Length: 507
Image (tube, rainbow, N blue to C red):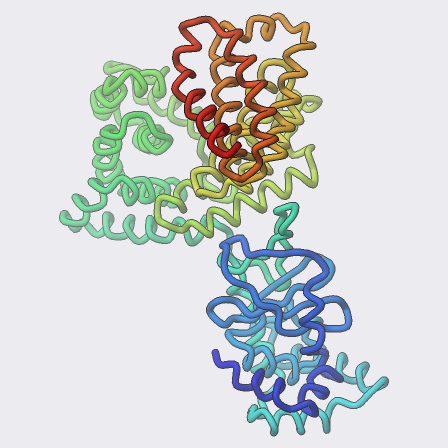
């Protein structure tokens, strides 16, 4: 993870010239920057150190890793440091053709691919003497193509989740340059599988530790969902009792299903007791057979619920299941990347929002959920991306409320002019609307929310040193406040007074 070779290239024009041609690692292109503004989804540091003649850029990340981004929207880690990245680019001048190769492909195939690519390169210019000279000058060993492809493969697999590159303006993610990593559910479920094995081993201390920890308990239940063993009934009963302490959760419903599928009528009192825990559990476990029912009735209830809500393939679970469990385990970047890629899919193809029961209609619920989940991760930029698309697909009162949320997010990320335009559009919509649900907006909570967001944005504009814009918006805020009923106006006045005072202060 050193940059010894990079220092040598910067100090020695001859070596820098060789690196640039024929190995296409050109230090001079670093000054040009990338073809577009980019940033890491994780927020980490990026430094452009070189480029190539296709518009690609080599970035050094905060930990020294080298991220290569091409001009077509793909990116990936190609070395743990500049030295390793240079070893690969010099040793494999056709490395772009090998990003999908792995050691599993075998030495014969790897060597054949490398030989074919390098013969094509040699038709136009030399690489052998140049490679030997550069390797010797930089102190690199003569590694075989098979070893270098293994190094490249290992580096590319490190791209997600910490080094995912985003277009800085649009927020969409670059595609992976190399092979895809494991599906999200594998790392998320790993701890649950380990705990399920402990529970099956019968260690009573483990039974207590897992059952009393909400995250471990839910992960163990998810592991049991996809690995159903006949001998699990007692441990499932144990987890079910403890999950009821969290009131209604998807995992409580899952635990009830896994117990109910056995069709053991002696479990009916336990299931009934769990259902009666709270009003939410009573609603969430509705339709459950009561004590005295037959085993067949219990089994049929559990089977229907299993088929509609759960199943045995983790790949069929909604991405939200795994991102929530990832967040619960502190796997923030894994969750963030999965959510970004899900949002990108919807942005590129809105047909993904089609309702299965009504294919001509779109459901906006996934976008609302994405905006909520991104805010939970503290990523308001991505939340705003989801919210804007959500707004564009809403109508009537729902669109107005969604626009208020959009203005709030725009204010939160510092996009104050955009927030002001969003609020101006809202005022125009309300003034021109013939929708009965919007005519009395002043009397409901919408009027109060409108006034509060106007005053909050007024304050933000004043704090940002934009007194003229703040005064203009203050006029609109005061007009809205003047139209509210006295009861609603009272809840806004303190905020209004603070905004007015701040505007006068900066004016």
